[in-house]
Image (tube, rainbow, N blue to C red; front, side, top):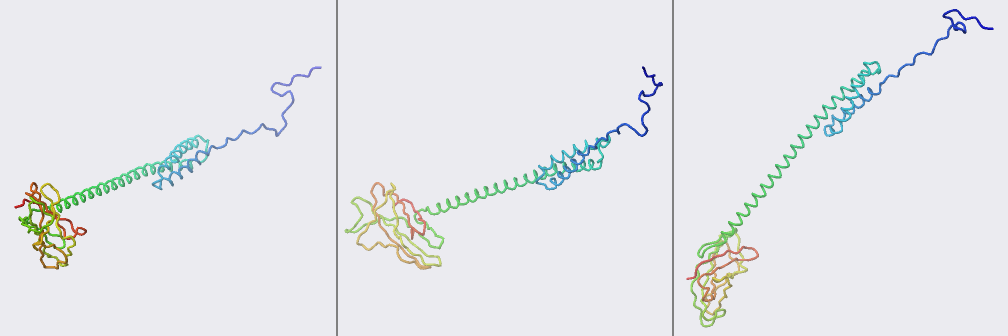
Length: 279
């Protein structure tokens, strides 16, 4: 037995019960994550940027905040996000953080350059000063050395006021009883005059001159019994004068010129040197 067909437009199962509706439309979750990230990264970028020497750490969060802020604003305009203000704030903070990063970089580079220039200038100044000092010392040493090299008859003055003069050597005739004089040699007398123009006494500890012949060999000190020789020794008081007389034996082939070195005390004074021909 077949059932009659339902009228047109009606369900074969009969009318739908009253109060029954289909499932509600599903709500889309707002995409607020980028706006939040932009705000957090923007704050981090600004904080790091304010610490000038951390600028190299601030540019990345600031740049990300700028990017996330732009995307978050786009989502808000499309209705996909509800935190437009947060995204905008993150974008602004990201831009500020980038400016701070750039400014910090420029500031740091400028300061490092200034410090480097200052250090370089100090080093160059120190080197120039050291060179000038070394040059001055060398000049002073050369001048002092030149001042200590004299001709016979000239006077050398020490810093304490002691003046030493070596007269031009004179021929010397030893008596019959003589030591240090070989037959055929030429004997010469060296006279050393000391004047104390200082304020303190001077102690002569090494009052013997060192004499070299024309060949540079040490001349032999001549000693005889004539009593004409006198060694500078003892103390020379301020304002006083003393004379030392010495005789030396020179080989005939090197007796035309001699060099005399003298110092009151080799441990305390530099030697002064006199050179010149022998009469």
